Amino acid sequence: MNEANSRKTVQHLSKLRMSAGDLKSLTSQGFVSEERRGRNRVYFKLRYRCEVTKRQKVRYIGSDRGVADEVRRELDLLQLTTRAERELRQLNVEARRILRTSKKEVAPLLKQQGLHFYGLEIRQHRYAKT
Image (cartoon, rainbow, N blue to C red; front, side, top):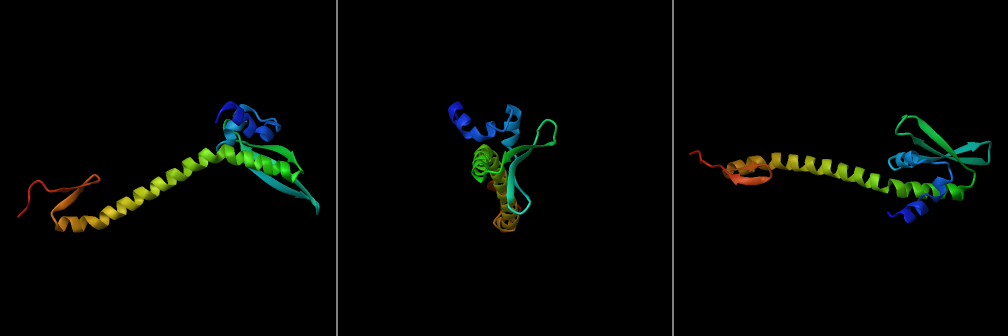
């Protein structure tokens, strides 16, 4: 993302007195909370945890749902890469698990044929036991 797009992406977030460190924290986590006061009044707040102090920070957004939705959209864009990386790690773990169980299931069949796994490769034994 170039600098112009980056500024455009965090247009509403920058109005909430966000420092560079705060924006960095928001790339990995943070959300917009909706709080009710009374019967009909709804207020929005941006909540996130500071990477340095590990304490929760809260920025008041206001009562305008449109602004809150824009902040949510900007937050989603900031967190897109982090979410994709997290999903890729989870898929990688699942793929390794499936490969491990598949190799365990296939190993007895290979042994009957005089073959075995060498890492991911299937090889013949060097010396046939007769």
